[in-house]
Amino acid sequence: GRKTFGNITKYILNTISANLGNMMTVAISSLFLNFIPLLPSQILLNNFVSDVPLLTVSTDNVDPNFLKKPKKWNMPFISKFMVYFGLLSTVFDLALIIPLYFVFNATPELFRTTWFVSSALTEIVVTFAIRTKKPFFKSRPSTMLIAASVITALATIAVTYTAFGASFFEFVKMPAMILGFALALVAAYFLSAEVMKRFFFKKFEM
Image (cartoon, rainbow, N blue to C red; front, side, top):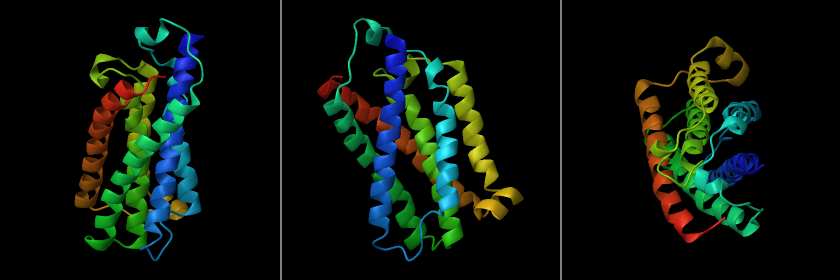
């Protein structure tokens, strides 16, 4: 029961912080974008691919310290987590979309494709930071979570280079420089989440 509670909590924390971050990003970007940042079909696909790895979170390992005593729902903790990590997500979203729009002069199609990939990947990788209070390399995720995350991340990038992605979701092929920039921000986001969680879990207890 305690393991199940722990893994449900991981899912909730991941999802609500990502949703808040995306909502704030869309609200802010609407102030300067002259097109829709993501098409409805792209939003649905984004939600699907980011949820696939989370379907395996029920198999994930839970840190022994978490299992020592029963836990209960702590809504103030969850709310604070949503705000802190939602804001972090928004910061990195803006770090992507502002250069895309103002520096790279990306077309709407390239803009949407890049943000789709970045948004999905950040939600996938952040799971490995927030799933434990320990440094991520000191708490081993389940094999299924790792496999689902790697496969989904690769598929997320690959679909944007296919005729299927172009026809059904209006994706375009990202230049290597744009893809590299997006992946670098995903890595920076993961490391920032690692740093923030240490501060957050020291300040707030579940």
